[in-house]
Length: 145
Image (cartoon, rainbow, N blue to C red):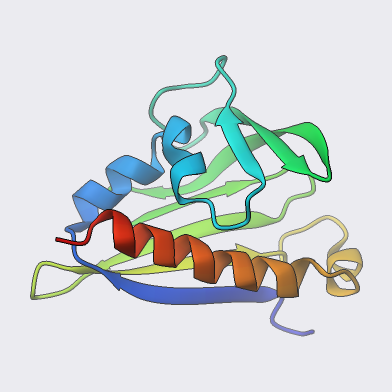
């Protein structure tokens, strides 16, 4: 793989500010997670994410584990991305539409990973693409009228 990213976009019937409010609250991440792996935010993190925020999540993929994340990209109401210990990133881009809705793109980006070849050879790109699709579908449903 040369691009080392998988992404999908959905139109959500809400302004970027409402969606960003959800994305910057780690306690809400389990509500939209389509992978089934995000269980809960750790209690030692911030209530609202900003650039440089460190936050932990309780996870489960077969076995339970904890993951620590750092927000590495941040533009209020438009972009947020956090990286895991291996350096790969989860990125959310919000593009407002003239009709008041928002095009939301979620990206799993392992081009920044310490060992991207290991991710290339794993099931993660395919599995994460499926999870992104489910996550975005959940997000759409959360803001349906």
